Length: 415
Image (cartoon, rainbow, N blue to C red; front, side, top):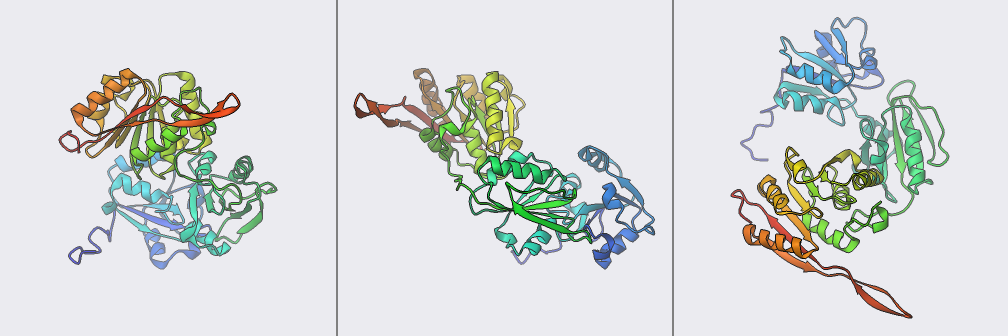
């Protein structure tokens, strides 16, 4: 770090919002400074369970979050605060917690956070697991299918549950995906006097955990690679799918990166966007598909591969492109027209990348014209497969594809 940057420049000593992490054991494990903050608070927000952990002599007004909590939080952020408000959070507020939402809403300079060990930290301590090499997956707001993207032989997973029903749902998913023999431990009420752990296997687990639980899974099952190029049969499709060899080349050309948004135009079965999402934890895809049956396939495939919570499905291009989140990267497969190419290029952020695959002579002319106008690279790819020919074997060529790739500069000209 540069020596002229003060470490405490943006760390508030006093703040409009004070967030205090609290464990299942409540008041007794809080630090003296956290206790002092809550003792002087005028208003404390939190869940009913969290507010009940405060001692009776805390005189602050206690405000339980309304459902949906996001709307109540937005209301708080929009209000004029006459005095600091205090917020209780489970464990570490900045680890899958309300602290991150409050920082986004108010800004880091207006929020002060007092952290407590997270449930993942406590679970790793109980299990003797190295937290640095353990993948933590939150199912608090995500569907259980989101776990699919993290399953592979040898992976150590800590799963943050939504409620008491989550362990059974996770066990069912593991069995369905071929991980039925995985050691499976549910840790409930970590840090409280009622803490308990129930260990078994995914296919034999039964139990009645509390709503506050963490699931530990030591994955035993098929090795699942994140490299692009899944088998075509791994997707539900109606023939409208970029075949495996070309899909692997295309996803590589798109260069998936964290935090980026991809437009998948003419999604078909959604295979390009789904393979993109499998390679990132924070990437998002906006898929555009005109056919209702294919659109249903896109959603089913996203659910099947555990990325549905990061895929936004919209209607036909070019109309549906208007108003969509600005893309960092664009892929155009089906439905390519001059209008679609033009809108996509204009919508692309500076430094963004576009990849378009042309199969027909008409779409080939479009990408050649696009390369003439905006630059970039044209590549013609042909794939042949060995297939029976009578009693012998011969090469069967697939339709060649012309791929255009370009990067947009600040001026809109090619890089």
